[in-house]
Length: 66
Image (cartoon, rainbow, N blue to C red; front, side, top):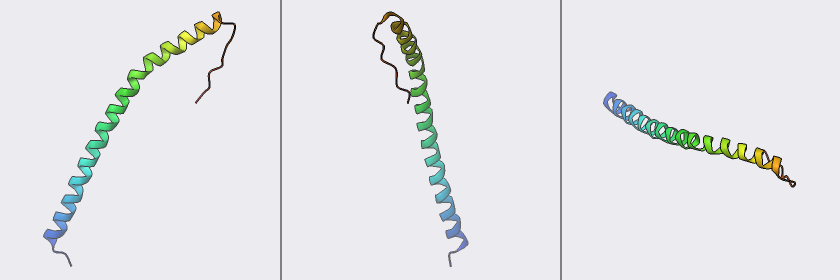
């Protein structure tokens, strides 16, 4: 049977590893949110441009929704 010190050390190590992993994930999430936010404005601009171009064009290709 493990001693109380061994149990403490094992639990502390697991906690430290989980906290470190959480911090990495939070950083990655923040980066992905920032990346998503950078795409929002160009997407809106492109959608608006396509709507205007559809009005001018005789040949319209429908957009596929994803």
